Image (cartoon, rainbow, N blue to C red):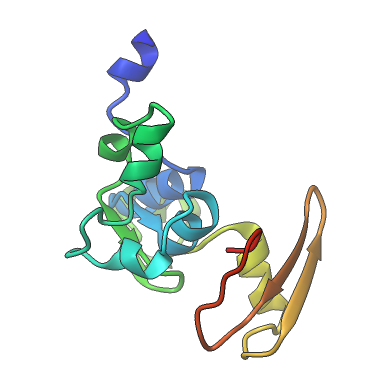
Length: 146
């Protein structure tokens, strides 16, 4: 409890890497949807009531203060987070200002590598878990699926 109360920020490893690369702390809307059980589009809307944080769910499980510790901004996959900082560029032997794009969970990013990008396509990702990921042109949910 003491460590939790002292923590100013709780974020995904990807968020931390983006921070170290660009100096900008933001989360991924794909992570928000896949891991935080929130509508990814709402997560990127700065005028959304909860700004991408599933406040009612967090309060229900006793983690209401987590919403205040998450990154305040949420960007969709592929959106530019910022340019590579001078320090990161030097460390990586790259040009300062090189664009850094927002990512997402490995399986969802893997869909791109499989060429699964058009409505009606399905990706089967296996490894530590097994996922069937479909591309749809409209929102669709049912019991057990989000």
